Every structure is written in C-alpha cells, then in structure tokens.
Image (cartoon, rainbow, N blue to C red; front, side, top):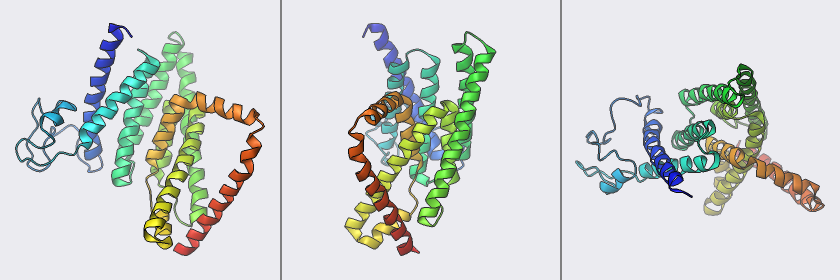
Amino acid sequence: MNIYDTIVQVIVFWLGAAIGSFLNVVVYRVPAGLSVIWPPSRCPKCLHQLGAGENIPILGWLLLRGKCRHCHTPISPRYPLIEAITAIIFVLVYNRFGLSIQTVSYSLLMCWLLALTLIDLDTMTLPNPITQSGLLLGLAFQVTAGYLDSNHSVAGSREYLIQGILGMVLGIWIYDTIQILGSIMIGQLAQGGGDAKLMAMVGAWTSWKVVLLAGGVASVLAIVGFITVAGYSTLRSGKQAGANKLIQPLPLGPFIALGATISLFGGDWLIDTYQQFMRSPDRYLFAIPLLMILITLFFWMRKIRLRSV
C-alpha cells in the first residue's frame, strides 16, 4: 500500500464517520417524526446544543468521556460505535471497488441498510420515507452507472434502469410470497409490509440476481435467528414461553440487510461454492438430514401455532 492509498483511506474513514454521525440523527429522529436538519445536535436532557468539538465523530464522545459536558447525563456508546462501523464500511467498500461510481453508490446503500436495521431493532418499523428515498436513489444510481459504463450511452442507462426495476419487482414478489407462506404456517401475519419495500430498495440498487440470492440468505438467517430465540427462551422459561416468544414479532429488516450485504459482496463466492457442492457426490449425504430438519421444523411450527391459539 502506497502513501496515496493510505491518505485516501484515512479520508474515506473520516467521511464515513461523519456520515455515521448523521445516521445517528436519522435513526433517532425519523421514527419520532422530527426533522433531521433542525434543531442541530443537542443533549436530549438539558437541550444544550453541541459545539464543534463535541460533534467530532468518535473523538467527541471520547473527549466528553461519554457524558454531557453541562448536565453530565451519560451518552450511549452506541453513537460512536455506529460512527466507527460506518467508517469501517466505507473503507471496506473503497478497498473493494476503488475510486468508482460503485464505491459511492454501495457506500450509500450500506448507509440506508444500516439506518433501517437500527430503526427496525428499535421500533419494529421500516419508515416509508427511508425505504422510498433509498429506492429512488438506487434507480438514479442505475441510470448513472449505466451511462458511465457504456461510454456515455443512453442505451446503457436504459439497460441498467430496467435491471434495477426488475430487481425491485422481484424483491416485492419474494417477500410477498414469504409473507403468505409464513402466515399460513403460524396462523397470523408473518411480516410487515416494510420488509418487501426494503427488499425492493435493495433490488433497485443491485439486480434481480442479487435480490434472489439475498432473499434466500436472509430467509436462512431469519430461520436460524428465530429458532435460536425460541430455543433460548424455552430453556430459560419453559416450553410455553418459548412458543410464545417465537410467534411474537421479531424484526426481519436486519436479516434482509445482512443477507443483501453478504450477497452483494460475497455472492460470487456463495454461488461458486454452491455449484461445486452440487457437482460433488457428497451432496447426497446432506439431502436426507436436511429433509428431516425441514419436516421437523414444519411440524414444530404447526405445534407452536396450535399451542398459541
């Protein structure tokens, strides 16, 4: 790594940290129906407006020692953590795509996914203003990327735009189908409408191939997560508590965001690994255990549904 790359990475890191600071504002204010522009950042208790030194990403929290300078109210370490995570994401995207339109666009996509993940964890909602703005920005990226990749051709913009629209439509179809099947299995609404909009947003930024893979990865991650929560609850509080815990709403947005991230940056490796596995004779050794697991899961879900009626 030369000095030029080091300097660029440092700039990218602090740019990501600054945007992460803004994401903290978005995550707090958008669900509350507040403006993300005004008033400026301030202490939620004493309403003291933060100064320039207090607003420095990551370092500001460290300099304040995690407390408001005026009322000494503790400031959650989540704020510098989100700033650091965003900064690291920006550096990783830059290292993958270099100085390109993809670096800019996928960094922005990661910001939208991170904000929606945090909001879903906090409020069990995926606000329309964020998913809809992300969708429109994704389509705008497709038009721009198509124009640049085709040597300034309108036909290239049109081709990329169609790719984004197909991804968007497929994203809605996938999660509408999952919602119907899940609702049949558990006897109640399996997911909210925001999940399909989130996947449509991912499709607008990427392509139908990424959406298809992301939907599968997110579903597997969600099943593992739900089973883990139910199993842990069962061990701690008994079978009935475990069943009730499973059928209660859990945020699906984080699983979709993680599945989209894995598919976008590791999709080629996943597909190659799957193809190699399917060509291997060992695939038959996993077919019967996998089928037994799926059957067991189906009857377990049915049992939970009946017990919880």
